[in-house]
Length: 129
Image 1 (cartoon, rainbow, N blue to C red):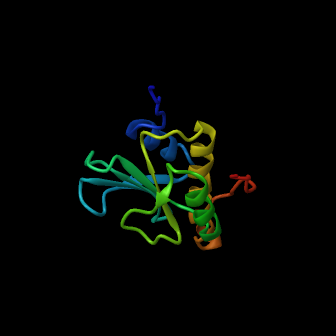
Image 2: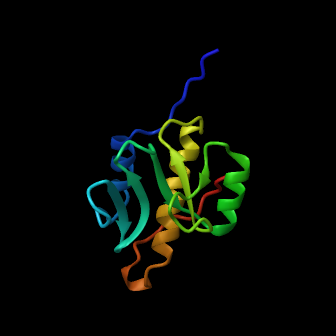
Image 3: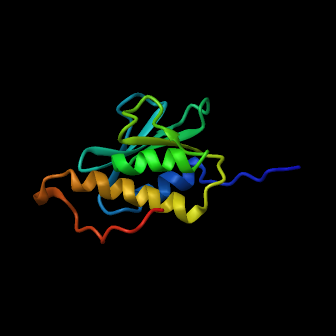
């Protein structure tokens, strides 16, 4: 039996994250990791080494627990605060729309932490699960 794994690749993920208003990229941890940020705060950390083949996104603490319990392809954030971050492997069986909603949620969660004067206008929150 073959299992077809889908999911975003590094280029798709980077492009999608950078399509969000005022999103920027930098490598604060060296060339092995790419941080996607809004207002200088990271909302996605991409492993470029190929050793772990995953990326981390910031989520609401209540959502982090639910996601890890519900989806085998979502694990507590690798080398991150497990309460606020989850890791998603590039090869996964998550629905593509869920993966994109989670990235938008991460962007929104991070932007909400910015001072109001630096915060972009955000769309209403959308349901994740």
